[in-house]
Length: 115
Length: 115
Image (cartoon, rainbow over all chains, first blue to last red; front, top):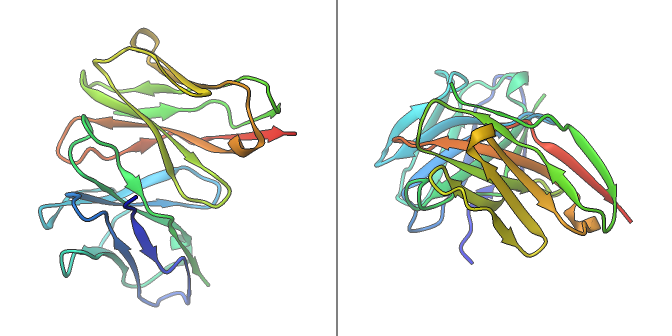
C-alpha cells in the first residue's frame, strides 16, 4: 500500500542551525501539508502546498520556515534558524483530491529536538 | 472560526468494555468534513474515517462506529469490546471546504485499555 515517507525519523540540532525535513508523498497525490505536534499537544497545521505553491500557511509558519518540492517527488520543510520551541514532531501529509472525496495520509513523522 | 473540542483528556477502560470518545465541533461553513485519526504509541497518525457534512448516516466498521449529529455538532466515536491494541490517542479533526482543506485537530483523547 502506498505511504507517505519521512526522513529522518529523529533529528537533533543545535539552536540557530538550519534543518531540512524531507517527505516523499504518495505519488499520485496533489495536495501536500506539513503539520507539527509539540510533545503531548494537539496536531497543528503549518502549511499547505498545491500546484507548486503555498496555498495557505498558519501563523506558526513565519519567515524562518519554507517549503519546496524540488524534483516532483520530494517535499521539504526547511527551518532556517531553529529555536528551542521548534522542538516537536513534524508530520508530512498528502491528499489525492479535495476533502469531500479523499482523506489526508500522514507520514510517520520526524521528531525534531533543538538543543 | 473553526474549532474542535475533545473534552475527554484521558479514558481508561478494561478490555471488552465499550467506550465512546466525544467530539464537538464549531464551524460557520455549511459544507465541511469530519475525521478521526488514531495515534498509537509509535507516533504515526492513522486515518480511521471521513464524514461529509451532508451525509448524516452513522457508520459501523467492525468494532468501530461513529455517530454524527449535526443538531448538536457532534461526531462521536465508539469502540465496542475494546482491546489492548486500541490503546492510543484519538484525534477528531475538521476540514472546511475550500482551497486547502487543511485539518483542524482537537486536543485528542488518550485511551488506555487494560487487560
